[in-house]
Image 1 (spheres, rainbow, N blue to C red):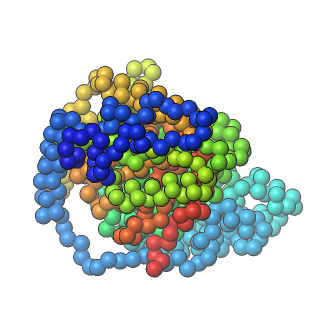
Image 2 (image 1 turned 30 degrees about the vertical axis):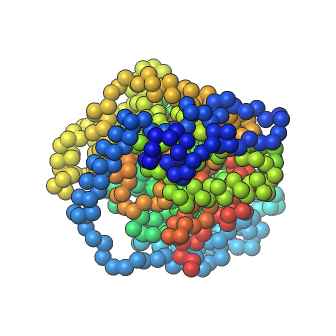
Image 3 (image 1 turned 135 degrees about the vertical axis):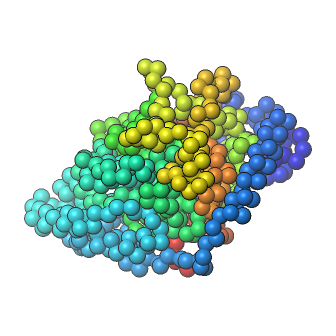
Length: 572
């Protein structure tokens, strides 16, 4: 919170800012300076009295609830448990490297698949990331791959062109249909539901030669930032088992971050790829909406959700992002011009260190501010560019924008499926108040997060706020003008490092940093940037203009080389 009413005091740095120097401009006459981002008193985000009051009330209420939680929550027994380090060198190679070695018969697919099975069996009892495996089937498929390679007469190039992921293991978020595997999204009433086919992006990855090992944990109905449900239980972070791996693709993030998978698939409608990738120190990409099919996921998109939902790749190595995206996009891959080489020297760079002071959202952790400044410094030193630090006033309303637009009806006027309906399927809708009463007695099959979302939905107005609509339209125009077709934006993924289990219940709006980007329809690559003093992953969102996904993928390669990429959580 601001310490006084001076509009040039920044809440995250607590230092005086100068309007004339706050925006760093590239020294290039060809660069168009967007007037909307020039810092003026109207753009510097000092909190109003009303916002300060809202922040105080929210902080006080959450403080009381958190104190009760600390008092009543069961104490964890035993000391800190650390994962064993990765020892098999096959687990330290990218998917592209593994595929090449398999094609060249330098290693068999069976050996690679078995190495990952062994690692999963070693770490999953601690993580609860993989909720259903298909190890026996995967080993049979790997043996068939080895036989195919042995009998192939066309040479390595033919295999690479036709089957670029041949023999490489894959893990899949349980919310996606994978033939023969459960597809429940963690809803107890869907126990026993099995997929009879594959979701389109899963099918494309399998057609490219990837071998699924199993499905991974998620939040209930994929609508919360912790992967916790009463069907499979809670998923743990490989860097600290007492912390969340994020959600909703947290099982994927956890299994990848532990070194027990090399590539995976997730979905993102409010940060569900990016937060798990951030918390688990891996790479992930939220694609431009409409490029990768969202079909055969549960819950299915409704209302305008298809405009904001993105399916995308998750992986430990940046070089796997682009080939995975090309495969998963299928017939739409041409829209992204992925074959065009990206020269980072020709791009324009921007950095936004925080949202400008939302009273609903935590201040950005100082370590995240520092590492984002380090990225800026390295870009300027390595590429000879000037990175403009800018502020967009609409970001302060990120949560309200996400919440408003997620509730809008589709083009035919049909609203989104109510959360209480999804919670009850395939039966009758649940009554959230009754579920809350049952939860307090330990009898509800639903998590507190899901019940809370249903209660909030019941009390929300169906009529969008004209002010928030105006803020979104203004922000959309500003950011599209800012980025154009050659702009790259650095923006925090989350204001906090990976939180302790259940703590996000008391900071429920912190996902606004990712959620607002969904509503804006922009592609984003999440990139790891080393570890904090606590040994937790640091990271940043790299945002580009619509259909300019290749720019942020190129930045991922640069940042991996510069900051080291994924770190083994079991290493000293």
